Length: 272
Image (tube, rainbow, N blue to C red; front, top):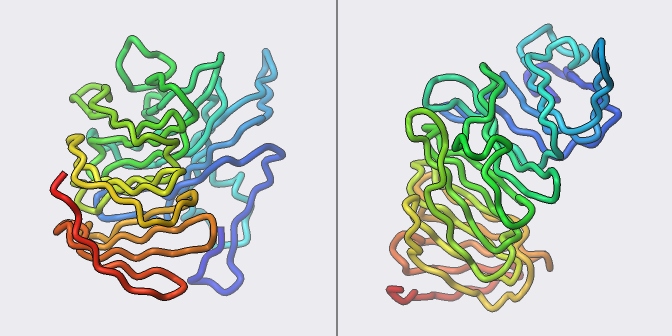
């Protein structure tokens, strides 16, 4: 972790394990650089009675010290998850406590996990103590700014949304996009989800599960990354061949498209 406010200031830790993802804490106001969550696999944890080797979530307080200190000195929690862990989202939940959402895998089943860091318990539907089961590896996971929704992308072709019901997260909806999902993004107001697939299709889906539109730009390559502007009206898409596409007018379904190498196209999407 590099501190740009202090020249050469940094905090670091060596885990001797595999870091799969990390996330700053998402609050109502935005991402905070004061706390960090890291998903780690093959972590060795020695207790009095046993040696645990597996997936863990580690959270750090980045306000400790004045830079150039070991991150081990700023650990808030170190939580064994008892399964392999994948992408992670770290956020303030509807209760005001810190939550993490992540992908997990154990006993040949993939899960969407949401952990309450205060109770250290999984807070999804009680019939799924290991997390909500999905049909393929979880590729990406994000949370809404108000903490009410957890959105996950899977290579089983589906986008999943879990919704907070006042006590835990429960299945809300899923939409198939016809190919493994490779990237997702959520508008800042939490109203629309952008989805990129491995076959080049782009979807815009409402937070309630309505497919607003879908389009293929004729760049039939894997979408490696996708992101939305704060107002949800500008979309940028990265492809595996190095192409970057910028789409304006997303909410109006009237897309001004700029592609690198630079070309310019105007698209009008059908109402369906």
